[in-house]
Length: 248
Ligand code: GLP
Image 1 (cartoon, helix red, strand yellow):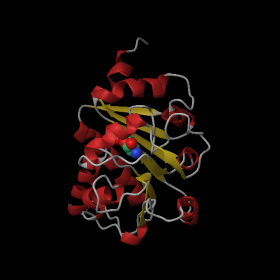
Image 2 (cartoon, rainbow, N blue to C red):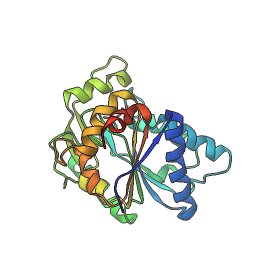
Image 3 (cartoon, rainbow, N blue to C red):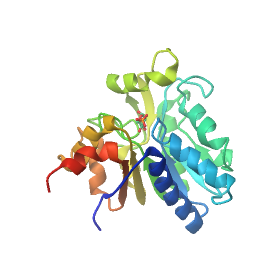
């Protein structure tokens, strides 16, 4: 099988619909499926679509399990920027996921290393991940696995690049963006049975081109997805523009 499969669509809404199709089909086939979920601007439309399909009786999340990719260190769920807060606002409060089935790394844990181990254990206990839905940072990061992170990394505490802090400043209401986060490791992500990479907007076109056509290496974390047997990239045409422009 050729990987990654490329699905290029017209709009952000269509990216969300295609991604929701994958989630819907998976939960139909396996109601207690294990999903990895991202935060950021990219998945907002997907979560809106998941809410719509739940409200329309098309998707039932009652047995689904979710693990988020990452969380900032030191940000409480009710504070600006919190990924736990983001997930509650955009998804948990809108569909019938059970709170006990929705995990996010605890960036407030007294022992962060122990929290990372606990997260890995929980993923193992549920039998691994069926579908990991990912976004991509402008420097090629997935989760908070910044350039230079080992492809074998498990869930760990990481230093967030300055460029990534700046890219996320919009969510912090003028407060300082934390310099540390907990992230699921690339090694953990690569164990997912299927991976869906969502990419939207012209500002992602350069990194998508590098990730999919440049050398596979730790300086572009998302490039390793090309070594996974089942990856689908769903991109809008603005994000895919440079790929399309490449001569054959
Ligand atoms: C953050 C998250 C990533 C996400 C990335 C892109 O850094 N840790 O998981 O993929 O931002 O975010 P956006 O979708 O807002 O471009």
